[in-house]
Length: 98
Image (tube, rainbow, N blue to C red; front, side, top):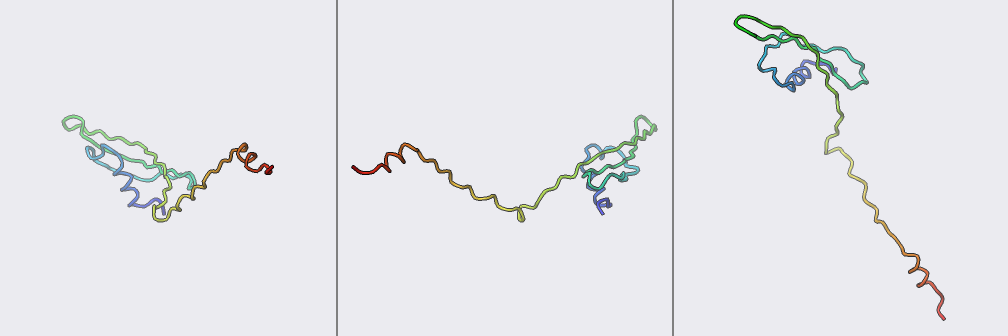
């Protein structure tokens, strides 16, 4: 399944500033499987003033981007040489001999 503990840990590591707060809860929010989006609901706590604890809950949306390993990628097609002929040269060379 796409929504695993390991993937949740990777998603949380991608967020900046979470090392300064305490993560209380984190969970996936359901999205359509074909939408290529992951939504995570996170609850954090931090101490604002002396003994005052602030708790906040927010959602983060990630977009899944497909990427192929370089070892399995197909090589680019060979470039075909472009040939251009000058029609006046063709006509002058192909004229009958007198």
